[in-house]
Length: 323
Length: 293
Image (cartoon, rainbow over all chains, first blue to last red; front, top):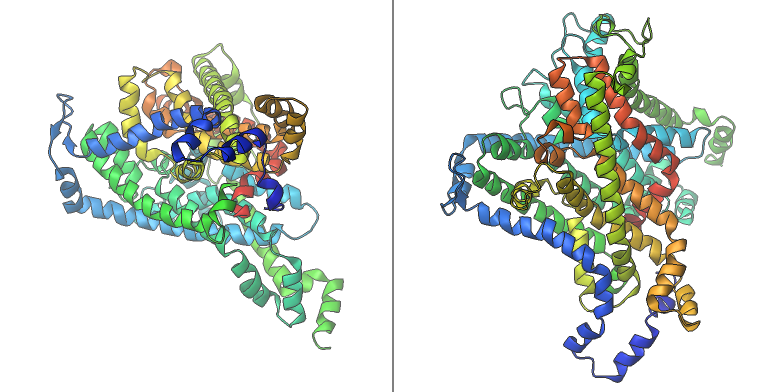
């Protein structure tokens, strides 16, 4: 990007010349570059095996009934899909998933962005502060899930205990065992885990906001709120979109936290798509049904993915993008 | 003039500016939110099982005890033996998938950075798109694939899976590093008679080693923390990795909260240390791609 003419002339001196001499037919082009493909071949093979094949197979399997007793499969068309879409449970799980995803994303984003704005400033202890704030993001979901489960414990948990100790509550507060509060409790734990990711992304973004722009706005009499709204945010539009989409996707796929903290309970109050797919497949052994469920989730994510790619490539020509 | 007066005054007492007060309040609250669970993990792990259940909760244990850690890290009792085995399993699976993953990602990233071949854009694009699927969707078919390959309940299944999951991001990160190494260096080597591979191996590789290390650490952390696939692919007790092993530990020895917290703490230490050491490097590498576009 910094020096396009130099970048455009990579190390392919000899090949490049040889190619221009001949007629650059598409097939010749491919064969003359066979050595280049060797570099990406291993990566390609592994990804085909572990990603390409399963993808096709999920779609295939979603049209079959797979009775766990026999282990065989019976073609049943789109029955799996209609069963799912007609069941009340599916829509309840979908509602849970939306609550989980949207609230987690919204607050993780706001808190992370706020943290980035503070940490971006110069002050003593800034590096230490940033390091501490990043820790929840680095540790495993499993460790996070156990700690939060312990914090929320209804008999011996810290939060409940302190609420009583300080006289805010008269009796123990039930977090994870109450259908009303289980989702908010899980979301709070989830935000704890992922706001640092937003902070990192936004910190990197904030560094790209040109100082001159901010100074110009200040000269024009903009206060800091106006500077933020009219200079910083528009400049970061792209990275904001990318970050939010990555958060949405990560939350839609988040499994460990919910699985360990509640397993989807109580009474299905915290059951989200991924948890339900897991139980359908590996507890009830209904692989066909679970595959159909996966395909629905996949279609949903493809839609988000479309916007993700568009955001990534926005304002960049394909040439620059592929560099 | 009216605009300059407060600025001058504020420069002398920066904490008086309303936005700074807001920032300090916000950051204090956020710090409490972030730190309390971590400290509570540590504090609980240093209590006896009895003390952990005391109400009101003790912030600092009255009687510090390292019993939980001693039990977990000693091979002379059942719990410790299991725990150490999970630890070794985790190290092995994470290391193997990291090393293999980087070995596959390096040439691919280099090709995407330097060469111009038909289909390059489309291929890189597919790498990118995959970047956004945290592959839980593929849990079922991968499980069936592994079953057909007779890899279920082996470490190999996890190593292959983790190495693949890490690939797209590794390629993406490494490509960023290669983009920052001027191609003139290789051109000079080529003029001096090196083959293209030699130029890559002898000039570019040494220069990009910080990038490779950052990428490897990222891949390692991902593998170390992974849970769903380990939960699905492994059945035998002796093969479990730490995240899954912890769950078993939890169920089997009833609710030994101090033990569980100590185990979580031990599991978190390596990744936190690795991360903090390379924090700056790592954060830059991770965000470069997103910001550059």
